[in-house]
Image 1 (cartoon, rainbow, N blue to C red):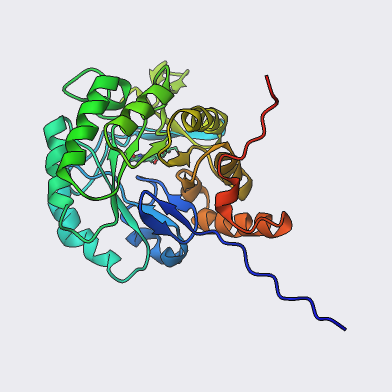
Image 2: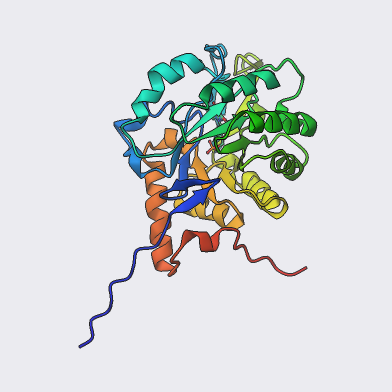
Length: 314
Ligand SMILES: Cc1cc2nc3c(=O)[nH]c(=O)nc-3n(C[C@H](O)[C@H](O)[C@H](O)COP(=O)(O)O)c2cc1C
């Protein structure tokens, strides 16, 4: 009797802007700290990549509490980029990652273009895998009215200046609080970005009707979680039609099915945000679930389904 040859396990590995990932599942900035907090709970080496909490030049205490509130199928936060600052990050947080075999993408934010450039230059010689420019935090005050990612010209300027300042792979995190996210993504591509991450949170608010006051001290905050998933998915679909650089899909991913929707819509990788708070093992379960889906559907390579959405002909 002929014995059936053992099936090769499906290939989940991808290449993202020159970075080799074991699988397409990353953890999103600000929801996984600097990795240390989760290391007891999650095998970090199994993750596709880690995007660290956004770093600024100076340490930031963030906004006053209350700064988190649960909403229907989501969370509003107004943390305000609380972080240890670039020097402490390099000296105290970065050494921790030496023990791990997982790509580390460092998210940076500045109030001005010069600050972004300075941060990128400072990180250039460090042992990190890539940079993510956070142009889209809704919870800090810029010296300009709009976030960078809400202004096409400002986006182009900051991305092209950082591009010249670093040879690291460069991702740009986009805001959903715009009319046409695809045109902003196009600007990033033209300015030399290696990839776009979308989306950051939607500006929202919640009100305590008993005292008629906003629940968040900051009045407004950023909405994340399953509530935003369909909109994030639509944005990934639109951006995929517009740019050639890889897309990291983010927004409300809780299950492998959610992640696969983003991949089919055009994301080469995905990142889990709020899902880490619900269950610290969400990212691992998503990786396992994608593998099961691939075995069940006889998909040999994850790359073959990126952007494979079948739309009815118009
Ligand atoms: C508490 C909290 C803090 C966040 N901090 C950051 C941050 O520092 N930098 C950043 O780029 N995004 C930050 N985000 C946005 C997430 O990375 C992600 O883009 C967003 O939450 C949407 O994904 P999700 O629905 O899976 O959470 C934060 C989100 C939350 C909920």
